[in-house]
Length: 638
Image (cartoon, rainbow, N blue to C red):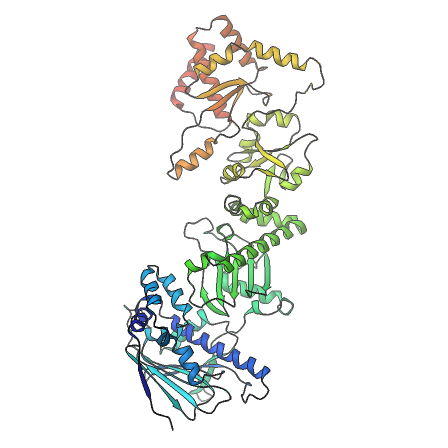
């Protein structure tokens, strides 16, 4: 027989707090079942551990499980476990936390927190996930008996003003939580939690990897065509990440990857890791073989899921993986987080930041291992994910060196095979101190650019960068392995004269400067609206002219990118370089010496500048005027 029922009132602040839990904090009411199953799983873990450390404990651990019971007539759903159970004091301390805490300070924090997820985290810190049951139930009854004790305890409340607690005899070891369910209300998000399909769906989403079996009664076809009662296990219990790697087959990894990624291909790489110490977690990550179609979509979702003790917490966990690794799929299972931790709290959690750093290093290390072991396979991976990995050079300064080691690019060294920066450095000429590159729309445009002429003539390798993001990251990265990255289309280029060692070389250079001393300033004035300077070039061998930028100028392509995003950037004037040995340039010099006031010379200057723009794939400021000038000159030449 039970003892006298003791009815107690919630404190005023606690009633307000409980109403927040029930009506405001949780946006998805389905999670009540996740909370209750997680509590049951913890109770089973505790009984298993205590039975190993206390040989005198009288407890049956042969079939530890969680049982879900549906009573449609009574409209109740019961979550039952045969775990450690609780004493009356435990119930007051654990289940009654909210009744005991009742502090105005916590309530003020909740009221001040406008973000529902952050408020949910504050609630979780006070251990009242159990109270989420009142979102879907008018009344909750908890019955429990602790292993090794004779008396049980029953706690009951309607979530309003009071709760009752009493001692009860004859209860089995363990805990049962019975929810007297509210009517189905689609507008309020209260589903039909008596429906078997709905219960299975929630268990599959949130509790599939709980280590203990979650069972529910089910009807099965009998031999004579009738149905007969049975019991189904709703969860797979196959948390691969919790098993040693040596015990998991490649087929199991691949099947799990397909399950969480919905990809029909096998992953390219599997990363299985465990961290122990002050913050314990397991991680099972996958690098896909092929990029998803939405990789560059604004609404693309990251692929890392967060679990706490095998309980699903959230998909698309931004705090665990940076944006440039958004293609990585997998699971992180933390042991020491609250079930109700919010995305906002995760972003600022010191331990989570530490987990993120280790995960990033593991992923980058796995990619480096592929690069070292199988260049062909790495080339395929880089083709899929190289563009997004280079975004990391803009946002992850802690891993710049590791990312630069992974960079692969087309090069003038080989028309088919890309090269790494490390391989480029290994082939550099004696005395070469810079890694040369040129960015453009495609390989053909870059290779045919006038800026490449001197480098090709003298055998210098140039990286060919054709991704839009290349224009950005090369300006952000100061150097690789002590060698600066230099665009062949920016700044002064000094490759040394072909006749280095000839005592007349310097004299020849000085003579050219003297020969063009009058033309260059005149051209700078004539083209002052388009360029800031006209000078002689050391990078041209066959073209008449090219347009270059100063060493730290923004490129025209980068200007377009910023303007396309709505940013206002000033127009940067560039430099026109002339090939002093080209017949057109020498003829222009002679014509200027003969008659500097000839108006036709200004038109020729415009044509030279426009031709240089077209040669590099640039846009003419006034295409119609350029066409008229060219037509007129051709007409006079015929």
